Image (cartoon, rainbow, N blue to C red):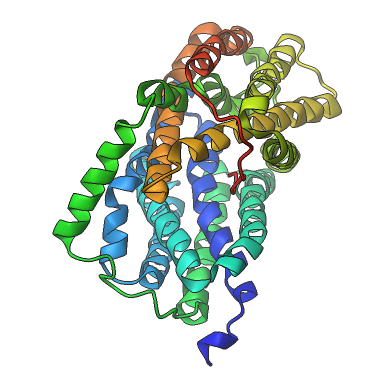
Length: 426
């Protein structure tokens, strides 16, 4: 088959679904798995927050993906490793040492997924011209969202139904991860033979190790010597300070019984509420934020977007105080909180794009996303310990108080007057 005949419709949807699914398996499925296996909130938050580390440090090994082999080779190999990691997690869940062994599997998945991100985004740029890159941007974003719904909703729903039908939590989650592993084995074979072979995708196209290392060093130094770098980096690290802690405890709160201050929902209900209703709110907020941000720019919308994200967290204060039994109220609260999060997150992405402008914009944006992941990892590590110390109601009040940190950081930054173009929000 001639490569010109391979339409992007045949590989962009599957490639970006495969890019998104392991991320949500690591940061969302792991939380629900460990909660149902009886791990404390302190340990859940600490261990799963460490899993963000590969996305924090991926800018440091991204030059190797440019230098060694082709992007196509990296994509296929990482999908095979992700599938192996998922299968390893599945087989380790029923064992006595499940915690240590599944964490090792999640680490393999996380590093492979972060590398897959680098290769997939690079391949997208090499395989398409500028016009097609713009045309298919919405398609790749859509299938990343579908991966989000699958990872945060459908797979959790599947695990919950299997828990109910089999009566065995380890068996149910093993089957769920085996299904996901089989999906990635299918991705590997499909992309091994179905991805195009663009002429520009050549191994070592970036030059020697020494030249790439020197260029990366200059790029890295230029990032930290930009005007107002200190306030910008502080903003990147703290904008999600309260939200990072909240997100770690949403699923444990939904799952914990009422006598422990939770809502006592079944696993499949959490998959439906958080993975479908929540993702719908997140997507709607992101779309609205993108439209308004493109029209008015960051300077106009920074404070409305940020306050929307911070204030909608109050919905969980309400849920923890009143513990409503009406499921529609729970749906509405999750929908509102995730809508505010999606709307407010747009301002964050706009600022990352603004700070990355100029020479080395692609590399600078990669460093920004690393700082973004670090801003999620560090606050999330202590969230479980704080929650168990305070209880759910006081923890959510504490999260609201923590909102003063991003508000303070927003007062320090400089933002542009002109509207900006909004890229993909994930």
